[in-house]
Every structure is written in structure tokens, then in C-alpha cells.
Length: 254
Ligand SMILES: [Zn+2]
Image 1 (cartoon, protein in one colour):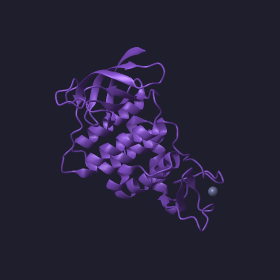
Image 2 (spheres, protein in one colour):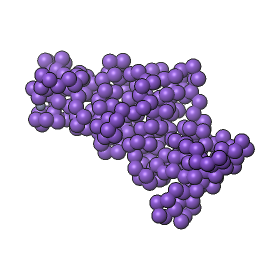
Image 3 (cartoon, protein in one colour):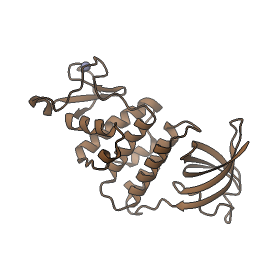
């Protein structure tokens, strides 16, 4: 048993008893973990409003060595997730970020860069930054990269043929197809395979996103078509990893 302090985002809540909740956090130092927040359901509970979904807060908790549920002892609000309430894409976009962090990360697997990415993404959704779907797509790809499960982008996942794009005059129209394990070249795409195509331009964008070079990524401007194609690539990989479509996706359009 040890007492730990960290900054964390609330990514899930579930009622536990008449007065308590189980709150799952994603933190800079400890990655994802769940704690019991005693009294959190009371009107004037010990944590005030710090535990709303997607709030960022500074917390103190007792970590159990046995892997049992920890106990939350303190929580103070840093920022609330408050996008424009009329913009459902931004609201559900935040829920989608929480769902992906919950479903694709392991307990107590520290991921400070992923924490910073999540904070940046939630801040961008709360700002007036245009086109929230492209903000979410950049988060999807970056999350897959940070957990080390971004599918290969440099070659066909079936034959290993290098996915060279932009190297000759005919390549502009050359397309690749998406599978759960990555890209498929035109030659390997079987007629019965009903996968969706991605353009060479989108493969270039995916490659830039795979580098984790913040100065490159922050300058990227994705067209609506590129956003949609990048999302299909990410969603296909995510479904391949979790075995199901994230439930928040039904409220989002890319
Ligand atoms: Zn191939």
C-alpha cells in the first residue's frame, strides 16, 4: 500500500453504492487505473465537482499492492471539459477520447506522452479550433502509435511490397486498401475483399502522423476526404484490437 499523487483525467465513472463511485482515471505517471471514491455520490461530497467525466484534476490515492481497487483520498479540479454545448461532435468527441483511453491502455502502464496528447485533444475540442473530426483522427492515430500498435505503413501487409507513394508520375492515383493488420496493395486486393480504399495522399499523412514529430503534426491540415480515410484506417485497427466497434462512434461522423 502506498499513497500516490498525480494529475489525471476522469475517463469513466460507475456507481458503486448509495454514496460511492468507482472512478477510472488516465494519469501522466500511472496510466489508467480505477479507484473507489467514497462519498462521491453525496451532494456535498468530499470531492466537490472534480470528478465529472473528462475533468482534469490533481488527485491523491492509496494504491493497493495486490492489484485491488485503490482508494481516492483527494481530488481538486484543474480544468473541466466544457466544449460548446451546441456542438455534439465536440461533446461526443470527448467521450470517444475517454473510451479509447479506457479500452486500449493497460492498468498502471505509464504513458506521459499519451496523457499530454489527450489533454491537448480535449483542449482543442473545447476551443474554437475548426473541424473537430480531424482533431479526433490525429488522436486516434497518435494513440495507436503511442501504444505501439499502429499498423505498418511502409509496405503491403500481405506481400511486403513497399508502399511507395509519390515516387513516380502514376502514383498520384495509386490506391491502397485497408485491412485490420494494415495496408494492402492493389495486386493483393482480392476481388471479394470489400475493404475501403485510401489514396496515396492519405498514406503520406498517416506516415507523418506515425513519426510523433510534433512540429510536423501540428502543421498538418487534413481535408475532409483525408480525415475520413485516416479515420477508416484507425477504426479498422482499433476494431481489430478490441474486437468491437467503439460505442461512441455511432454518434460521430468523420
Ligand atoms: Zn501486396
